[in-house]
Image (cartoon, rainbow, N blue to C red):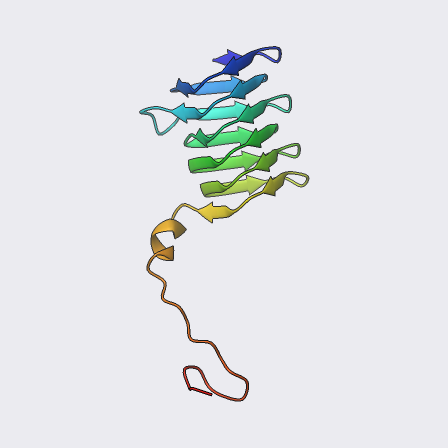
Length: 129
């Protein structure tokens, strides 16, 4: 499916298979029921909303969080303002992200981490000053 450069969509977009966006979308983009679905945002694309797709290739602008359960490719003109959760990431020189990067597998291990005691000057770990 292709959303042309002059197209503007207001509302959520749900798809399966492939979706290429050259225009503007104000709403969330979600892939339904398919782990091989791919979203491609060209350098002209502007998305204001959250993206949840297994495979994402971005060369445009996104204002919102991105959940790439498999792979995300950020090309040179990609401009992301939001958090990016991914399993595998490829980022070209020139791509920008203003947000947090979180690897998919890290979400389960982050909750299991225990705080490490602070080291005081001249002491050892865990010793009171």
